[in-house]
Every structure is written in structure tokens, then in C-alpha cells.
Length: 121
View 1: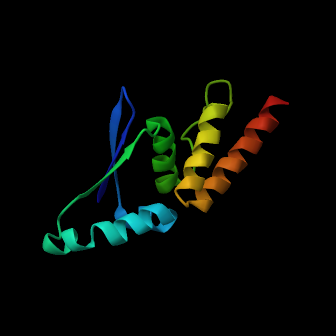
View 2: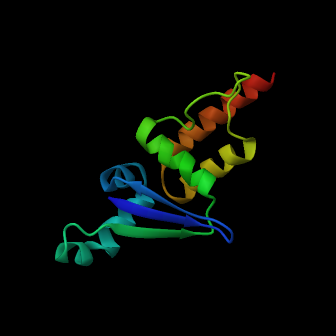
């Protein structure tokens, strides 16, 4: 397991994810988990790796977290039948995916952005 600590100036959230899923969907996490902690992990196999993502939006990482496990960016639509994520969150999700080398996540964000545009017509 990997504990990812996402923090801003005012909030801090910790997410626990399976290492193999993180490495599969993100080149950034693949590199971080293969290089930085290889020696530490060989000493103690039950060691839970902690990664810190300072100055990241916890809501955006929560979107990534949800997508990693469900392949969806949100769980349910709102009461009005609309996509519950704000435009800004979807765009930030795309940027997160791009900067963390997660092309499938980027594609999901672009698809959702298109669906949100269609809903607004």
C-alpha cells in the first residue's frame, strides 16, 4: 500500500492506494515507487510507502483516486441529472494527469469535459 498525503496551506488528506495500481496508471508514480524506495522496502517488506504531494488540490486527487479504482471520475450524478464535478475540477484533473504522466486519466478528463459541454446545450 502507498499512503499519498495531499496538502495545501489549509488542508491535508491522506489516501491509501494499492502500489501496483498507482504504478500502472501513472508514469510519475511508477518512477517514484521504483527508484526512491527500492532500498527502504527491501529492508522491511511490510513498510508502507508515504508520498507527499504538497500544494496539490485534495479534490483533484480524490477524483484521481476514485478513477483508479472505478475508471470513472465521479460516483453519481447530482439530483438534476448533471455531472457533479465543476469545470475547474475537470480541467485541474486533466492537468494533474498530464503532469503525472497518466494518459488514460487525461483521456477520461477530456471525455468528461465533452460530456459536460453537451449537457450545457
